[in-house]
Image (cartoon, rainbow, N blue to C red):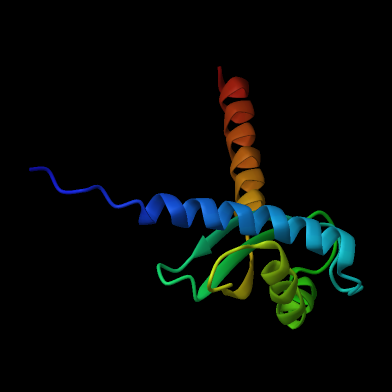
Length: 123
């Protein structure tokens, strides 16, 4: 008899996705910290026991260090807002981390464009 497939990883992805959607709404509508500017939530990673959530964000403008400090300072407020919206037993403690993926992608695109243009000049 085949073993029953666990639904825990799928549930963790669903919880992380819901946290991301609800946090984006809470940050946009209810967070008044001036250090937090135009924040985009890139991803949320939840631990298997749902005790902690690592929230990756990027900024359109502003200082990433100040934004991370503002978001981490408001983590308790945001967690309380999530508690009202989510219907799960444990609402995770939030940890905000600046995501440099978009910066790295832009740098890689610039390097590729430079290499292509230098190769075109050689031909």
